[in-house]
Length: 453
Image (tube, rainbow, N blue to C red; front, side):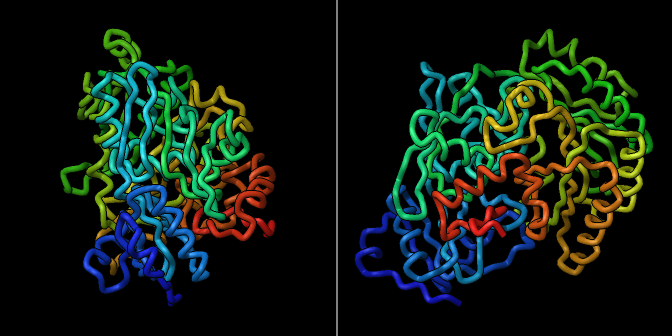
């Protein structure tokens, strides 16, 4: 393990905590959302402010230690923590400021979407931000940030106005269209490749009460439900974001179902009309769709992603959901070995698809369906079985996949797919990586290696 020396002057001035193995709080701080990840950093720098972040980067550079960055700690690949490295832990940096007149909100790098949504909702405002409320603002946004409002307002990055970034050389800069526009372009979809983003300024939109929830059907109706979903999403109004999942009932019985989570951010009367085809189909076993405050919809799936569960994911993109692809998905799900596993299809349409593929570093702007293939279990002895199921299912679906993939869903063994994640923007990202981080100090991510390898 790399020896990381903390000079006395840094120890004295650091506003947060510097935790080494054996210190109180170290064991808790090193744990992230995915329980499959069990690594021991040489030093955890629990930063209280931007100055602490710069000190942590300097400490890692002086010791030639790897730098990992933790925001919410949700990344399934476990890139927030490395054995022997310096973890730059932003989780204590949770300040939020909302300007309701300008409809802007600024959040520090440790803020979760639950915290952000509560702060903006006080003013009747919201920003697209994930589908699980415990996810961090930082990691989700840096990779793109799909969510319930993306049909009307685009992804999280499409609402980003500016960001404060600590670069590898210790400089603290503001990235926006007016200041350092190349860096601003790169951090909107380029992951953590270019620096540590310590705060985010977003546009916020007038969203208060939405019509949202979940309709569920028995698994033996899955082919018909997914066909309905395909038809329903063909000409979907921008106000509606609709997903479809092959999942297990939340009662712990292990019953397999097909569920259609949905969120409509328009007027309630319009939502009733727009959602009628989905709600009346079947009819469903369960219909939990109705008006609710926007922050609530972002908590509806939380219980399905408990902290500490063991996770192994794959992801893909489908230009269309063919009947053959659907039947392959259903057959594979019937063999899922864990009652915590599933597949969720996330529909891309509306505003998120009107933005040019090269306007931000996030390139996937065509209408279609993003698949999260989720292996999740709680018994370490079942790890090999569950990983095998995910890999075998992914292989069976490969004939139907488009080449692109959402960078936030890539696993730790998906290096061969990194170019697919960045698509036509890879060459420009490589050029900017060489400018902002030529020594690849920020490499614990879906990495753009400045060597071009």
